[in-house]
Length: 76
Image 1 (cartoon, rainbow, N blue to C red):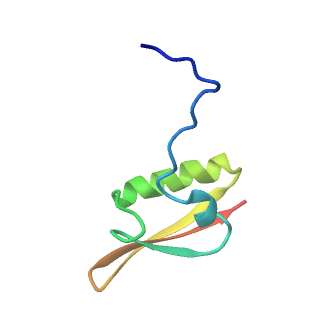
Image 2 (cartoon, rainbow, N blue to C red):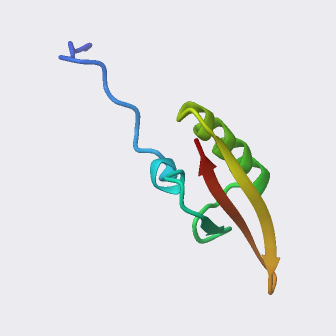
Image 3 (cartoon, one colour):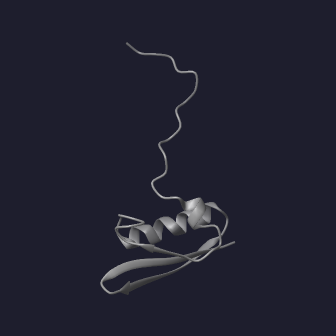
């Protein structure tokens, strides 16, 4: 039976803490530890989120001892 809700439900929690990662500090995120998506997908999402915040994001991918990581920094 259908039910009436008091308000439209909020979307689920965000998968990644973009507000924290895009605070202007330099962050190194490790694949498999900080993110599980493919690195190009995270790069694309970082650009989208930075644009949402009115800025851009500086990025670099690194590979150290077989570990892939992404360095990013938000720029207003």
